[in-house]
Every structure is written in structure tokens, then in C-alpha cells.
Image 1: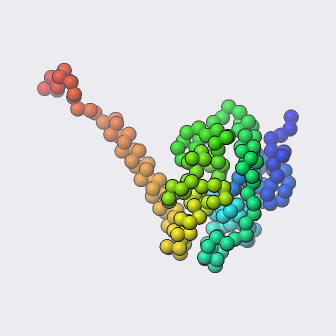
Image 2: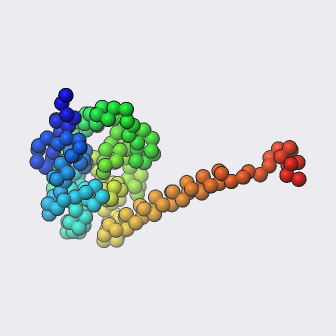
Length: 206
């Protein structure tokens, strides 16, 4: 039986890449050893890279190049066609027959036909949105930082306001923590004793 992934080609070296050694960015497969900064060739991980139009960067060079260009003018490569992206997603789904991928935003099951895979996470197409403005994104119209997604206009705006991207991660983490705190408060309130509401309950209380 042919091993899954024999038709997948690494974007960097154009050699076959199997699923167990694959990393994906902008929907494009890479060998883990080929997942490098396009500027300095340094090795990257899913937690320490930035991406623009499918071009990969380490964080220091991403910030440096962005400041120098004052915008998104880096060299681009063409992302895969939508049909190819859906085809690859279907292969991954069939390989893991019986499993159900969950959307990173709504935590509901996401199926291949409605799936967007980005930053190592799965999203419904309708959930693939800018973390700042909520506008829908595509694989060629987003910027990513620490797994947090932005549309290019808002990313540029937020970057220029502070001159760095450190506050973007801080703000996103604060929002996440606030959301978790709200969920915890709601759960606690639901578990608290309720006041008597019927005549029998009121009589028992007295």
C-alpha cells in the first residue's frame, strides 16, 4: 500500500514529503528541516515564525524587513490553487479515518470541504477571521504572529502604531484570558444554589 503523502512535494526542496515529517504554512507543505526563514535560512517552528503571502520569516527579520519597507513589499510566491488545497485536505482527512478535526475558533467539528488549515490549526472558512477586525481572511490575505491571525491592513496599522509587534501578542493573550474568565464566571453562576421559586419551596425555607 502506498504511503500517504507520496504526491506531496516540499515547497523548498521539491522532494516528496510524508505526513509524519510535514509542516504546513499558507497551505504549502514543507519538510521540517526545510521550514526556514526565507531571509536568514534559520530553522523555524510553528511557535516562532511569521508569514506573509506564504513567505516565511523568523521574527527578528520579519520586524526588520517590515520596518525597512514600511509595508508588505516582500517577494511573493503563488499559493496553491483552491482546488489543490481542498484536495490535500481531503487526503489528510481520509488518512485519519474516524477522527474529527476541531475548529480552533468555535471548537466544532470541521470537515474537509469547509476546512482551512493554517498555523497548524484547523478553521471553518467562516471562522477564519482577523483577530482585530473580524474580517474574513484567505490564504493570500493574512498575516500571522504566534498563531494569531490578522488581515494585512489591520496588521500594518497595529504594527505602525507601536513600531513593533510585541503588543499584538499581549493584546490577543489578554482577550483570550478575559474570555476564559467570563466562561469560568458563567459556569460558577450556573452551579450556585438557586432561590426558592414555588410555594412549597418557600414554605420549606420558612
